Length: 452
Image (cartoon, rainbow, N blue to C red; front, side, top):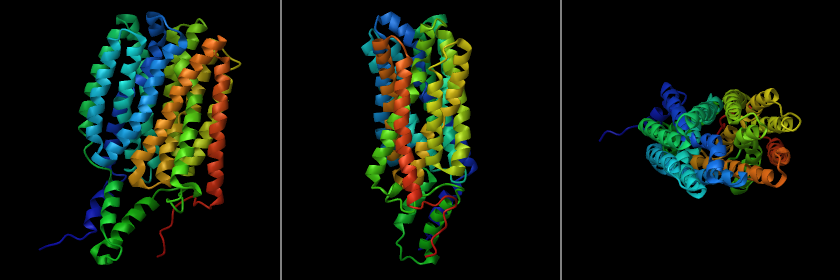
């Protein structure tokens, strides 16, 4: 019987890394993120109209966003694990149905609680399928340009934020928010379903790890055992200027669970701070007398600048690594929040919104890069899902907390200060992890293959 050399099993997956197929897959992924994450920003635009129609306070009107983000985070754990186990396509198809159903259900809701539950459904099963699993998958298709590839994937989230708010605001003024929601569900659900059919292929890094694990260490080089391990090593080594932990069984010199928990706390903290402007800028502008349309424009501008920030941060990440990129973004985000305190004029708010988008856009994608750099690749989906869950819980907590502070104080000034405090917590955690990386002598630059 003719046997196939073991090295042949890895040749095909290895050839897919950084390939034209990876680029086309990235483009499909971008479209899925734009459609699947639309609800994250649409709900902020309809907040004033929903508050008026249901006769509730600002904190209660913020609860649907909070519920959606919490469910999105929890759903990311499930969708990440399901994608690791079964591939992306089934997860994305289920997500498409949930996004469509959630929008339609919200458009037909009769109370703020039903409206909130509909957004919870979109987050738990719908949007969660197009966030953490897709970022984890993208990181496993690229090496030389891993940072910019993940940044492009994550930019779909902000493209959604730049694209949908003005469209939805126009729909609210023309046909009402309920009819606009129904149309959003049909468009986004159908688009996601069509794009999901192009996502059958498993990530090459996962296939390589599975193939390498199936070859005994004692296999002769001619049989392919050494070739498999060398191919995986070369693929990892080809990533330029990425800090790589010497021992991925002890990321940052910590037990994996402890390192994961610290990243999750950091994710909550940075996104509590991030949520204040993103969730409440429309309501803030309405309170200042500028109108909801101006607020929607500022949100769109903020997130459009976030796209630029994510792409630039991806390039920076390829050069200095995920931890330092996250530290830089977090420090700049704190500066952006501080600028909202002394300025509340129309033109300054446009400028500060743009600056805030430029400052913070690269923070969340950096977590996916950090996971890829310091943890085992076969666990990427679940671990990225856990960290993204933490960031979304932070967004949910920050959105609700800012509304509650406004109801208590009658002003958003204290909410901005609250965000700055949470941002400082994020800086402290990431600064400590970076200190540990330096202390344990993590390699900065190209990882050298073992001489043995």
